[in-house]
Length: 49
Image 1 (tube, rainbow, N blue to C red):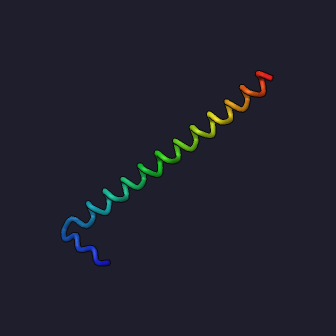
Image 2 (tube, helix red, strand yellow):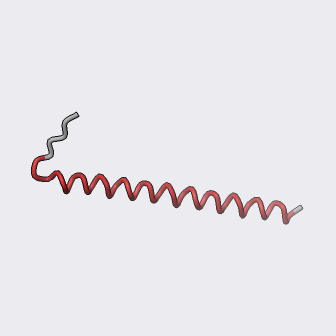
């Protein structure tokens, strides 16, 4: 695979890197929110019994 980006190589690679960082951040936040919600739900179910 040969990427010939010409004089815009740095800009294109920075854009890809930035997009990847944002996607990883969104996934990380989503997983953290899911875990927090699951933990809170589990605690609420235990308190209800």
